[in-house]
Image (tube, rainbow, N blue to C red; front, side):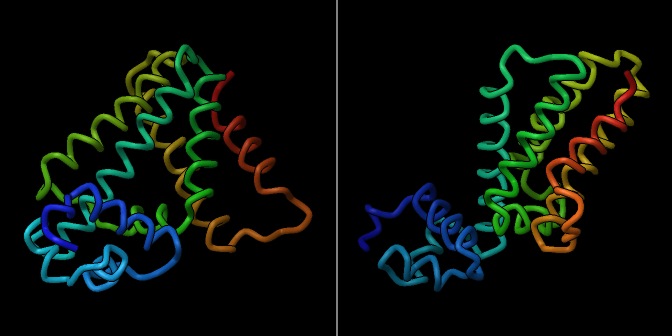
Length: 182
């Protein structure tokens, strides 16, 4: 593929598709998907690590935007539950991509990514603060919601939770509800 047809966005989209399909990410795999040689990708990304973090950034941006649009007007305890359930469902629907994002170490080496993480954390904190205005309780509950969602995505998505007597959606909802004060 000639350089003028390549772009950061197309490369990231190809990487997302590869990961979502359960294939390992590599410059060679992305280049094959785009019909070019891996050397052509170096004009856009210095290395695979840079591409990986660009993918993480794109995923977090899309997740945040999707949650903002789906939760518009939601607030309080019901809004927190809706946020957590929506986030969990989106993550489980794209489990390979979710696990990829979750396994990438946090770093300050990519300021744009740090900003995206902050925007997501702010969305979660604002939703929790709409029901629980105490600052310390808000921080603890936001962390608890994040831990419940991430833990459930990892456990359900990887097959660790496989109890036929307990539906994973129901148990998540019950655990979430039980963790939020009335």
